[in-house]
Length: 202
Image 1 (cartoon, rainbow, N blue to C red):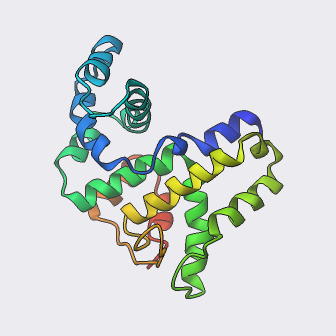
Image 2: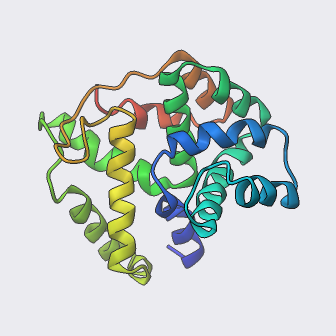
């Protein structure tokens, strides 16, 4: 796998998990397609994300925008109007599209644990997974151990936020059923392959 493909595979999961609150705040503004100056005013001057530093505000806003903006106005409209369960699942869709490493982990670790009736993910599930991928794709070793710890933490947290596990600590696997609106969006986005990924625990 080339370095370019490695970056695309990892995506921006290092920037955060599902970012539930930040996305809820920013999505309505993204609907207005703000230019660079307006975005800076909202994020830094108005500090709509209520961050303690401009650096963390800028990073969080950039991550959310990178995930949501490419999916278009109709997606953003549904994101801000659908009930909470569908909202969370649509955020998972945006994360899976932007960071395929998350889909890979769900398909090959979470789904396998469910298949063999394990009640929870193993404590070393993430580390075992990334060690295996680094052996297969040496370019992945360009990332630091600290970066991978953060990515793993965000992946586990995202699974908990979306209900696939009960908590980042216990990691007990739970069934997740996709909302009809989410399946419709996967069809619109030509990503029906993600249905199996997102329904890997039931």
